[in-house]
Image (cartoon, rainbow, N blue to C red; front, side, top):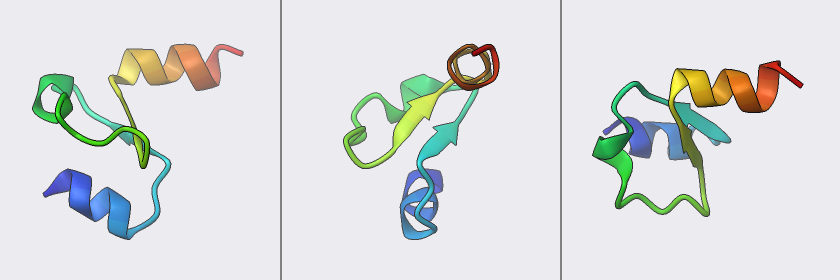
Length: 45
């Protein structure tokens, strides 16, 4: 549900604390990151 909602709203990144729920998701369409991975990648430049 969250993945579909993110796709429909053209999000580039989905942030989740439970990335295991999305391990079979197509990450070519949307990047799935934990909060700490998001901060490391996009905030701590």
